[in-house]
Length: 228
Image 1 (cartoon, one colour):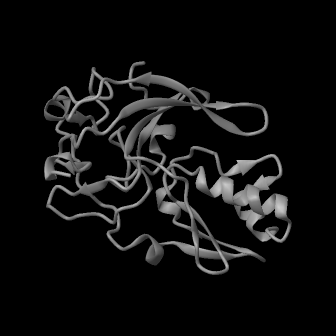
Image 2: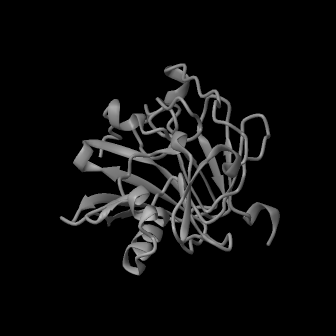
Image 3: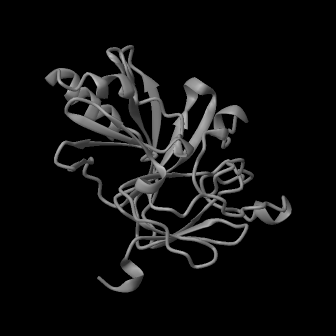
């Protein structure tokens, strides 16, 4: 694969995310189904080799950048820890599973909760085969990658994702959610630093995160809406 075809996100200084490598872009909408949460399909955007996604929250052409960061004097300084995920996360051990959890990465997507309990409770009950399976599922469905389930041999449970980017909408919370980056896309900081490549991560697009470029769920408290 040629270098310009490798999926990549470049964070520009106080500006947008530049996505290159023909990465598919589409929208998913969080909905309650009475037992938990599911995604409803939203828009599918035309495939482009390169595009710029807004991260200041001011664009009138969401999710794309329209230059509003310049008028708003957006401060996009990156403040997220650059330590590897496993160094940041705390560990919760259960009978047959271990959970790692980095609280700073929460996107408040709520998939970690099920009728039978939340992922932390389910990990503690993972000697029950049904609850063990549900614990893995609820950890895997965390879009931010905050939560990861591991078995006793150290195997990490991860869903299979092709490189793709999802714009999350959350009408139940009356807000628009973060940018969900999937499938191991390299993210490069404004200073050229290459962040740890992960299968799941969510990037702020409301401009209000205290953990930039990562989402910290401030889109909920500030009621960020992208106009759609």
